[in-house]
Amino acid sequence: MKITYLGHATLVLEVNGVKILIDPFISDNPRAQDIIVANIEADYIFITHGHQDHVLDVEEIAKNNDATLVSNFEIISWYGKKGLKGHPMNLGGKYTFDFGTVKYVNAVHSSVLPDGTYGGNPGGFVLWSNENCVYIAGDTALTEDMKGIPRTCPKLDLAVLPIGDNFTMGYEDALIASDYVQCHRIMGYHYDTFPPIEIDKAQAQALFRSNDKELLLPKIGEALEV
Ligand code: NI
Ligand code: MN
Image (cartoon, rainbow, N blue to C red; front, side):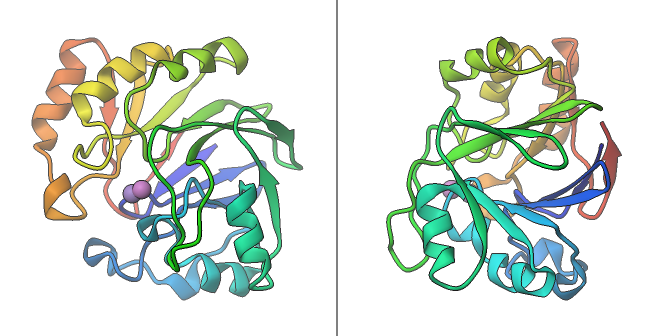
C-alpha cells in the first residue's frame, strides 16, 4: 500500500491498484499550491466528516473521475442530491469493497456540511487488504474508543493521527492514542495549515522517538510505503 500526503488531512492511498482519495482540501490550502486538483485521480473518495477543510474539492474530483464516495449516511445523501454516487456507512460498520475491507469508526469531533446541513457523526476509517492495515483517524480527540480498534480489526501497520491540536488532539495525546491502537508507526496530519494548528515538528518527533515510536511527517506531495 502506498500513501501520498497532499497536505492538511488529504491523502491518496493506493491499494491493489485502486486509488482512494481521503478528505480533499487542496484548492484553498496555501501550503498545497503545487498540487493540481484537475490532475488528481481517484476511484473512491473517503470523507471522514462534513467540515470544509475535508470536503472542499470533493465535488470537482468526484466528477472528473466518476469516483464513488464513502462516508456516513448523511454526507452520502447530501452528495447524492448533487448527483454524486456513494456508499453510505455508519459507525461500527464494516464493508468489503473490491480493494479491501473498510470499517467506519468513531471520532470525537463535530460534523456539519458547508451549507449548514447536519453532517452526521464524524468518523475515521480502518482499511485493510491482503497486504496490510491502516487507521485514518479523521479529526478527533483522544478517546478510549480507539482501544476497540486492535480488538476488532487486523493488526495495524500504520496509524494516521491528527497532531495539530486546537481543533483535534495534539501530538502529546496522539502518542497516547498510538498506545490505544497498539501501533508504533504513526503518520501525523492536520497540522501547520492554519496558525492555530502550527506545531514544533522536531519537538513532536523527539517525543515519539523518546517513547520508542516513530512519527512520520511526509512533505506535501511525498509518498510512503506501508
Ligand atoms: Ni473538522
Ligand atoms: Mn479539520
